[in-house]
Image (cartoon, rainbow, N blue to C red; front, side):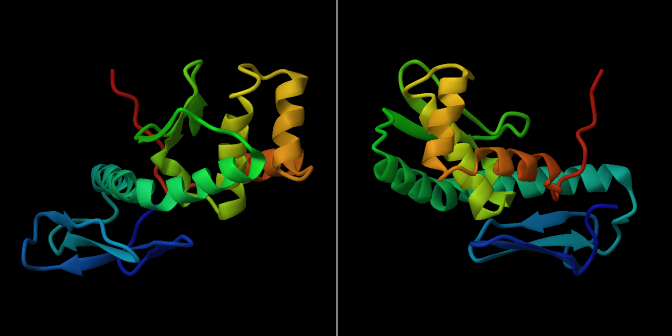
Length: 175
């Protein structure tokens, strides 16, 4: 079980808290708000149910998508200014397999899932994408530029990202 009554997912700018509610006993209610979003789960719903856990994962991702522009983009713009990078545009998308992308038009996109990361890992994702504005590949030059942006910490941060424990259930594959 990933989510439980009374559980709180803490992030720097946001907390998501799971509570029981009885006003709609067979439903989940939620409104994305900062600094605390309440996910209210009906009293008749079983937290041990795998389908409910998947639904709650989707709710958590919807909260992330709704609030990610306010959480991620100001810092991303700040980093871009600090390193002298000028993306043509920024956007946030809902995917969770790929945490960021940069295309040949200079558009940088960040996954809303990045809101769950600690600030230093968010910065890593942003710097990685900003490096692609200069090097549109994963060559040694691209990594060297990203490492420069990160003050020499790229390899350390890659390891941290690989070990990060996501507060999301594994995706269920549909046939």
